[in-house]
Length: 96
Image 1: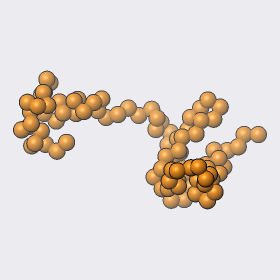
Image 2 (image 1 turned 30 degrees about the horizontal axis):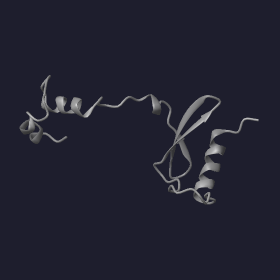
Image 3 (image 1 turned 90 degrees about the vertical axis):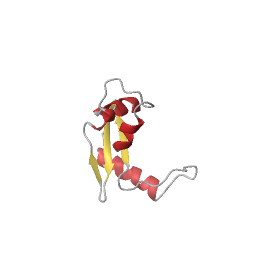
C-alpha cells in the first residue's frame, strides 16, 4: 500500500509540531518551510502553507541566477573584465 504524500506530510507536521522527538533541536514546521520527500527514488518538494502543503514541481531544477559573486559584480559594473577592487565607484553607484 502506497501512502499518499499528503498523509506523510501531515504525519511529519504532527511529529515536528506536536510530538517532537526529545533529541530534536530544530524548529517546528512553519509557513514558508520547504520539505523534500524522497520516495521510491523520486524526490518531490512541498511548501508548508497556512493550510496544508503545496507541491513545488521543478523546485530542485532551478539554477541560481548568478553563478558567483564575481559574476554578479561583473554584471553590475557592465564591464566584461571587471576587477571588483578597481570598480568600487561603479559598484557604489549601483545597489548590489
